[in-house]
Image (cartoon, rainbow, N blue to C red):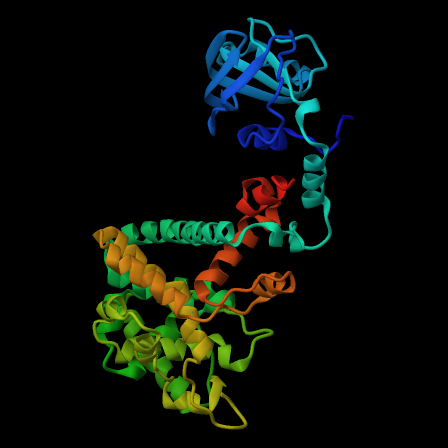
Length: 428
């Protein structure tokens, strides 16, 4: 088989790991018969590529490390001959044997003539094909049961990444779950565009200060809008002027420092999603909540959570989206169905899962997953991309998995780390 310009060490390692080559009649560069009993485990640290391999060369069984290169000459280019970590290899695997075998009686195995030509062509297609999804419609050749298992792993991976960050936040709050919920709920109210300033706002206003004034919506609005940096300047309407005066008193009392107002984004947003509206809704949530964390942990249906999040911004916001700018037609500013579902997906189900994991409560972990499965699949540019390629899902657990698949694998061309990619590469 002619040399392939697409061959690289990542592909060679993939082929070796999964035994995607003809294992019959293997011989070392010295002509000895060779059998791979165990290819070894990938080494993620410095040193040879794999450890704990088991190879039979002639009548001798060798156990140890394996190093892979596209060409034998790469051994010398990489300077391994001077590195003690590479002196006790069980085997040197190469795609093309183009130089003298490495010293120390280490056998060399050339795989070039044992790799099916179609496999390299399939890999080339994944790496260079048009479209944002490397596999495009090829995923249809992978069995449904394989895809379902991969989707479950993708969801677990997504939550592991998210909850690792939350664990740090929980430690920052001295393991106060109420604080974690307060911070994450605030970030969620900012949704994607204003999540960061909303989180900064919540961190700048201690929960114990907010709850001290939870019975007075006007004071809560003063605290939240003041800490958001939105009460600077001169106002015409009575409401912001009242908030301004109240905030001045509370800011001095609690020695508060607002975040910069310039962090908030209003451009290219529907007015109902303006951060001013979301801040007013968040203040209303704090105002009407009693033992919110306990209620969140104990809510296991979408209906329960909709009741929990059935909040509306204060009366002033019935006629405004921003201070001093009256709207044409009055409208009550409640959280819509899509917003509530977004909060379930990104805050409530994950925090239930994390809390259950910390408490060792498997039943609650399972209920958090069932809650996610009871929410419709998200509709965004990533799920739309999968739908265009004939992969649709019915619930948020599925859409979260597809988002993880696209962001962590497809967009990075990590097909060799993907179960779908493996299924395509194994195709006969």
